[in-house]
Image 1 (cartoon, rainbow, N blue to C red):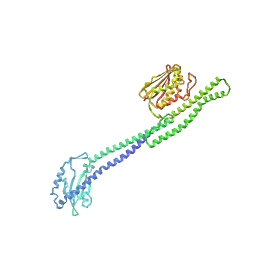
Image 2: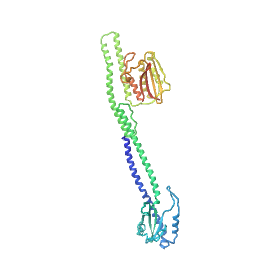
Image 3: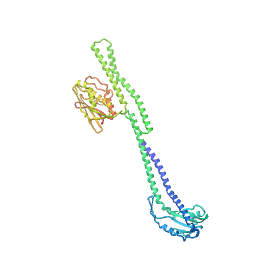
Image 4: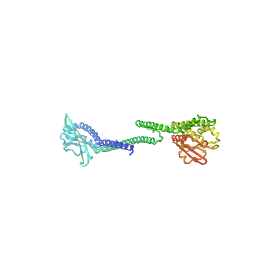
Length: 474
């Protein structure tokens, strides 16, 4: 299972369980919270009524007062009040008054007048001077039929002369409880969903960063060119930089060892030729023969210089993991500049050279490297083009890339050599001299193409050889 999914599952389990626990706890607290608030309001109401009824109870005129009529009118009222999205259409309080013996003197419902309520907790506890309250089910089998009763003492001179109780059915509170629970459920679900979304984004970001590092490490282990991924985050950035540093140090050591071995091998042939010519020059010989050996020394020295310079250029390109700049480079102007630099050689060989690249044809890349790559291609083409032969530059633009083409008239490349043309130090004999080059030019061009995200292809066509260099369009 991918690490990102595992992280998300752990996060999902933690957030889900924590959210469910908190949400269920809060949901369970809504009902008692609402009832506690209602009880507090009933306490205030009962104590207010106790003060209002004190004189009538003291004088025994409660039944003759206007209170029964007022309570009857109160019971018929229809508030039609919108309370937090719930419409209240009727009043729900029941009020009854007892004397100091617990006998009901007044009942707003008209059902309990004359009954003995002295054993009910609201009346019993209040007559004893304690806080009197009770919750009783009207239907013992129905939990939602419970009614909350709160009582307050009616006092005269510090003596309890009666009790007034205010009752409210709990089912009238249910719409508010259910509405609060629904809103809380939606809010809780939204918060949990948001938390999971953040967790998914975090897991995706972390796993994505790790995937980039993994791909980079695999590319490094395979010896491929790869740029250090851009990562955000202190530890990940430090890890990426550590991997890059380790790669640089390991590749640097291996690179030096490989190049020392290669350079030693390639230097043997020209050095042997120079040494042999020098030993022969120590003895007496005709002037013409001496000049020939001196020429050999000069040619082999030039070959050594070219070999060292191209090895250094190739080493610089191979060690780079990306371009130092990326600008629009005009191909026609670049090719024209290279052709002017080889004008003397072209004129001496009476070559027919064409530059058929459109003036507005551009590619995206590093101008210096592209110039060096095209210079190697041109030099290679000049080596294999016969006198009075034809050499043509052209370009074909596509949506995302431009293909530069270089055709040179000449003998076709042998089939056995085609797959090896870009190998380091592999070269074919030049038709004019029979000598081989350093074998680094096409390898350098291939490295430059890879740095630009492009491709180099070489093949035979009718009448000669066609080189195709694919580069990103400008």
